[in-house]
Image 1 (cartoon, rainbow, N blue to C red):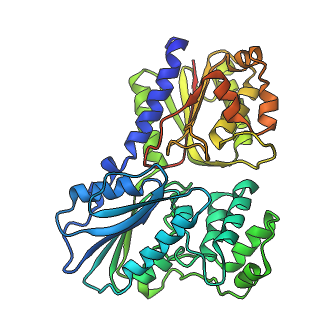
Image 2: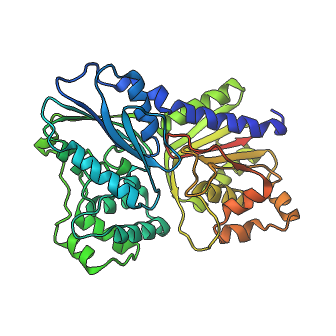
Image 3: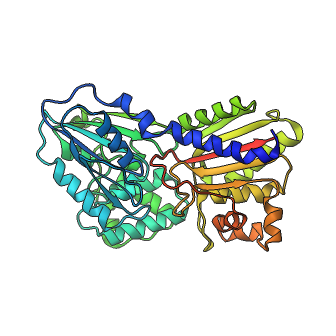
Length: 422
């Protein structure tokens, strides 16, 4: 492959990865085969919730109604299911109102009714209903602190569950005695359904004590009322084995592994050997970038542990501990760290993007790196190391014209990374 073709090859891999986990492709096979005796109510939350609801409308034969909440700009043309847009990653009043309406909507259902719950990444922030005695402003402040702390998504969602009136299985309890079928697009490493969007319809094994420990680990100060709420056990969630979940079922319909395998197929078709490193890599984005750079150097210089040409593919969800004031995004940060570590090594190209089309809170999905990226930036007066120190991966790749901008993809299986070594 000629280096000039590398950019399009990497974009093709990313586009294939996203297409493989779209609601249109993944959801229909998991719909219940028959309508219930009673009502069918559709509820849900996440960046892919509206697209999922549209697929349900297109394939469901019987009566249908409901409400889903998605991120601003991620709506879809639903006719029978109402779509509400709200803020992500920090919740807002629109999300709180939507969550409240959803809880009212499921009240009074019977055992003859069916609830289809459509969950995808981002649902935790979008479905914001603070527990009694806790304000939305308090939840917003804790959420912002957690997002800046470097905490993993599992840790963040553990805390979110215990300050919520709807997460951690509470939505399913509100639906009882109706049967609840939950369909999930996974955005969490390991694909634990109880972690995706903080598991509003799944029992929760985590505890108030664990939530407190996470806040202390990251030195996040919370109001005394919130600390007492956790310390007293008032925020405890329903646990596995609770009989109220007995009739319910859940299916993870799309995962990062599916996306990575689709990208690997593109590589094979081009005669490039793909190696899927992992679908659940976590850690600081800049540290993950350094490790990937070291592996790429070993392949490029010694043909170990893989022979080139090859492409190294990985997924998961990295984190960024914010120290600077630049426009970041964890994928841009990963890629900038990779660039700094590679020192312009010939023959190495890379892409890092979020499969939802939004890298953190910016307007890009991610970015593309080439062997001459740092050199081109230097000519523009842009210093890679300084930009990394300021958490400004967005600014670095924007200056080069190397941001990847897709707009909302309406699905989300988290990070996608591919390093091509020619």
